[in-house]
Length: 267
Image (cartoon, helix red, strand yellow):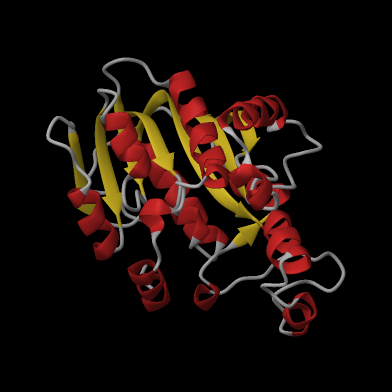
């Protein structure tokens, strides 16, 4: 995969490091960490592919886990290194999700692919990224793959905030006029999918799905309300979110989703 100039320019000018700082962003972070910690045991090794500025990698390293990270964009790596604390057992390498040849087979207990699938536009590339994640993960290890979900983004950015012109997107072919399924190209920066797309993508792999999670649920659509919550109400909202984020009638209405599966492939 060639590094997209659109992607470099976006992350050079986007404050990725603080994206998860507001309360509405914390919903995604806390939910993802809650599931990671459900499976991660003391002394285990983690690989984060597409680590961005290292929000998850650093959080896990500061809890004592051994973390290796791979990131494509040099600017993000610079911020990642700047945020590294002295006691963290952590490394970061420049690379991409399609080629993890720097890492041996069956090395990691947990592999995180929390960003790359946002920016891969063909099923072959997506499957190559998943295939590489499976290869470096131990038999029985757990892989976390994140996606940007089209319906949550359309409802929030289109119908609610008018940041995108829904009619124009249909005319441009970026939305199907009948199903409202999204179509993306690299210049659009983000590949927007639905759960059925994830199901098709994963159908060829020897894995067992453990969870499919609406990672932030309605948090982006409710961002102003959530950001105004006091801590007691925010904790109550999180409790509600945690018990509903895997419900089948909720998983399509989210901006981000997390597919969590076990590696069954033998080396």
